[in-house]
Amino acid sequence: MELVAGTDEHFWANRSSLLQDYYLHDWCVPKHDDKTVFELLVMEMASAGLNWEMILRRREALRTAFADYDLETLASWDEQKVEELMQDPTIIRNRLKIQSVIKNAQATLALPPDYAGLADYMWHFTDGAVVQHHPRSLADTPTQDDLSRRVSKEMKKRGFKFVGPVIVYNYLQACGIIDDRISPQ
Image (tube, helix red, strand yellow):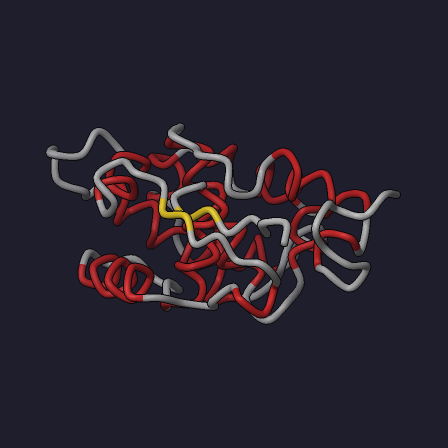
């Protein structure tokens, strides 16, 4: 495995080929598909307190467990379904995180018709522009900023769960709304 250019062996993307592939081909790449944007929200929530590589390894299992992110299906789930998912060893079995997936599907479906979907809603915060910070090292990359705090606050008002400013910052990176790729020095 070659090191990601402009970084050292301790950089998160250089810990495995899976992370490196994600960094090079997916992270900070703009996404406008509603299903993908919802999937990334689920993955970011699931990763809270854990590591991203674990979540990437469970990506297909999460997709399967959460009905391929069909919002109507997810929004209809009840506590019985939560109990069922709590028995699934292929996903992150955290009750609050599972309940948040259901609540977030409901909140997504309740977005005003001004938004074509979740992707449109998320991109409206930057008027469709990518925010580029141009960090020179991991240390230069914030864990949250004014944008993630504003988005977090707005999402919470709309009923989204598990969307604190740090999770939202990571989510905005995953969606490509924020581009924090390390710039060569």
